[in-house]
Image 1: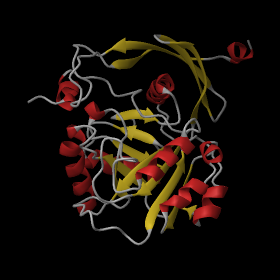
Image 2 (image 1 turned 120 degrees about the vertical axis):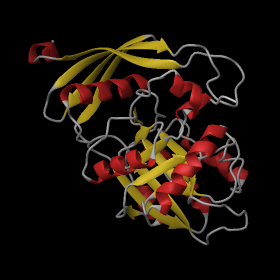
Image 3 (image 1 turned 90 degrees about the vertical axis):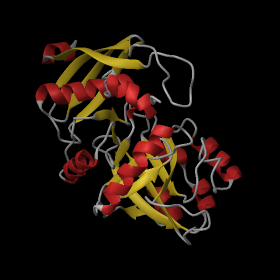
Image 4 (image 1 turned 135 degrees about the vertical axis):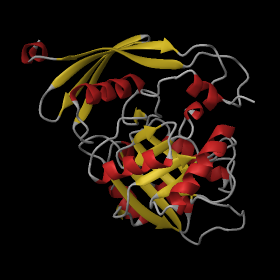
Length: 313
């Protein structure tokens, strides 16, 4: 039987501009099974899950559950759980880690401040500090959301872990099941689709050097979808791969057409025209959905460097 990821790959659906959006990611270790909505359908107290969802709403913070690759016995719950927070805005990105024996402490966080890039409350409440280990590679493996994530994501996470790659976690949901295996890399927040172990290793090597691998990249979670596509198009056009070099500073228009302004840290600017198209032929966007649809795609129409006169105007 065909899967959503097979159909997406067979029809060469483009991946740029398809990443989940979040200025800040908050990750809580939660072993055991995950349901469709993992915060309220896992071994985590569902009342706590609902409270966390409410606290994060509208703040720019996206909460996900993580677990180590491998088998997940329901009875195995670590005494202390790992917690990560990562802010993905270029020039201000950071990744902090902490441990907690009581996940309810997360409700004491200032979610609005986290979304704005302020980690002080995270550090105070949870004893957080800057993450000193390897970058994080979060592989979506939640088969309850879509079977492709389990069928393709779990083997990838296991291969990376057994080959000695540090910082690998399974994660509950990254969106875009049809691009499985999907991976989010922190601290910079770039997502990848149709990932293979050797490409993930290359991506992580790049992150350690402060650069981005564009091949297979879905975009930065810091930006909305038109901005994701525009930023990647500028990187490709000018050969700029430094992780912190580019920012989306303005997005004008609405679907199906936007004009996105991308700025370089050195002062250069580009105007990028992005058009929303449809990925044909119609097909289910997820294995869990029977209705046929045409997934939206972000097509870059034009990349034009702006002159000083145009910027002044």
